Image 1: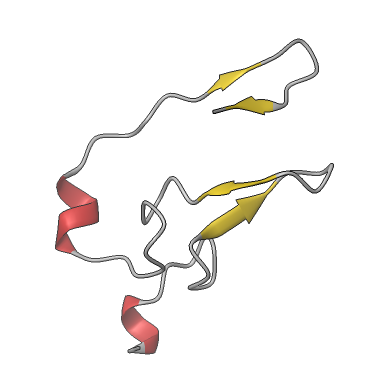
Image 2: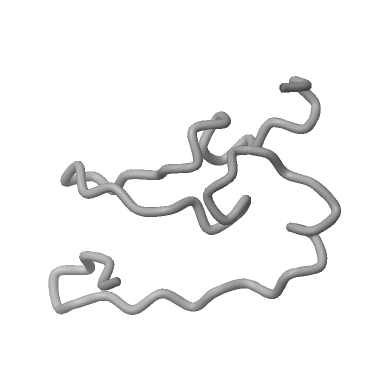
Length: 57
């Protein structure tokens, strides 16, 4: 994978984790690990959290 196309948020893994270690799909590249034109045109996904600010899927 080209380093310039690698998602900077997840460093190409496609997964992010919060401070408690819970993992979830990267919301920047949508889980594929690369940031390209398709990701730029998609709108942001609003994520829901519980009362402890943990992400809900």
